[in-house]
Image (cartoon, rainbow, N blue to C red; front, top):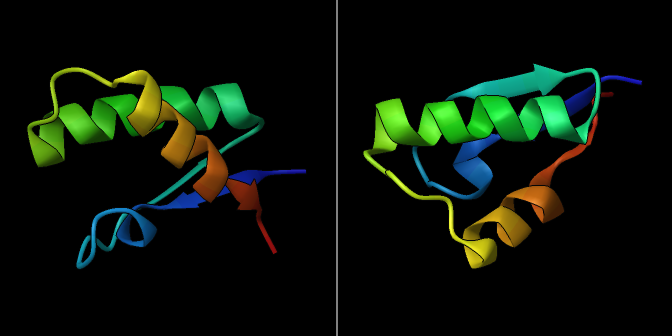
Length: 59
């Protein structure tokens, strides 16, 4: 099942929705999105944990 992350769940106001085949693919896309759109250069363990918690199955 496809996984989904709605960036706005973590960064209020961001409309980005990232999808992938699995959590790993979504995490990779999320790291790139964070770097390019939110100027977050390092994904800390705490941030990674929050992102993982926000990933869910796409309806």
